[in-house]
View 1 (tube, rainbow, N blue to C red):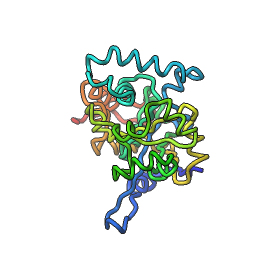
View 2: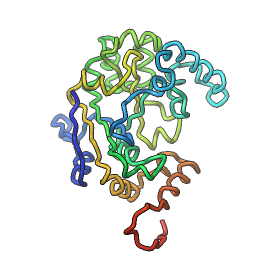
View 3: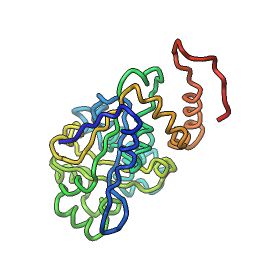
View 4: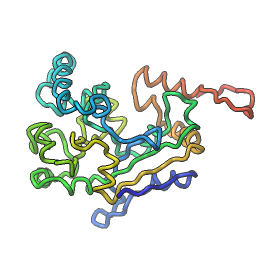
Length: 279
């Protein structure tokens, strides 16, 4: 069962950011938590493949990846070598996949919890940052996956480790049996992956809603609910810390999104005359 923590002040935000655990074996403060921010605390956690293809996801996934690879090979000639690489590249370009985005950085999680397509909705609902413990998740994996981790001296899967563990998505689904899933660290094929400190959970097709999975199979997962009254303050703090669309999405698209939000005017009766300041 996951734990729910309601954050309604900046002290709660600081607790989220500084929850590193002391490790006596290293004499360092470290953990293996990853974070996923979502703009609405009531949202379920489902993959884009599940959301778009629904009950036909098992049939349509191979066709989606095959067609994507056929046309994307011009951009990445190595894409045909690995179905997992196809998923990762596709995920970052909006392709429906079974992957869910996570970040090693709680700041990145907070960023995605405090942005909206319609900025008028920032005060309309609470948002959420989910936290999962990779070690707890990977302790549930079948023995052959555990053996690959032991040989590699690593607790997070790379593409190479994943390919050593299973032949492809069908084998992965059979191995997980709806009772486990793994975390993969993608290769740095795009600047966004680097800037977002990206990780992915690979959701088995038998797992429809990851929230239900976390509730049934984990004890260390946390749902941080950020109250709607706090969202703008957290958002402004993140901008001050240089955590914004400009960094998350390098290029003119990210820059434009950041500027649009920076100059957004809230509809408030108490607002003073606007005094534009340099960035």
